[in-house]
Length: 283
Image (cartoon, rainbow, N blue to C red; front, side, top):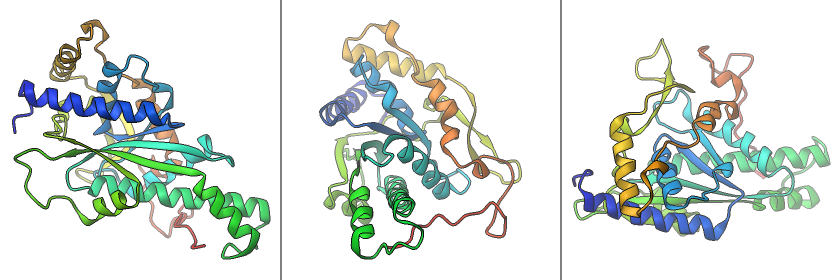
């Protein structure tokens, strides 16, 4: 399917209008934007809704090319949860591309790990390091705190007439059936896998070809991307002077959520003194 076809672009915009309504209805405390696929989503959502809550958006490095991306995501989410939820809970809403569901699954799993870790840490801070998290008051408190951190993800699901059957993985249906995934179908995710639509660039890891650090090194706003946003503004009847890339400062500073040892050029392994296995205990 031609992603440059005006009718295909309009279908994409209408799908994001549905996503905008979900965000407006739910009014989450924090909107998670996995990079870089969600960057165009946020820009289009701003054209759909001039009052889009950019102050609630937090960008997280999530590309499979990121060095130790699972640890990066988990560490970033631990920081974001601590910032937004503390000990009182919060609602988080992510938005992500879905073709097979694998990238959405990667992000969701790491958020769930971070949520569990956050609940355990705060419980042990309150009840002491020797508290039994498998039963009794400490267990109950830990579970209540974990459940107070609500997470959902809006999946922009590519399901056009040319989409091959059986592309959705088992993990997609797992999160759908558990009420975590909110699917919004579109014929074609017209911004997907088009590097000219991803204005930010990660810092390359010099000793590994094709591997990047979770640090935005520079911006390269391609004219094709601006042309696309102008086309979206025409579909929406929005003045073209409103067309711009949003939240560049937040995108540039997103690395602050990532644990420091995962931002640097130094390659860590399990023998390094700064390495910490953050896989949470089972409670």
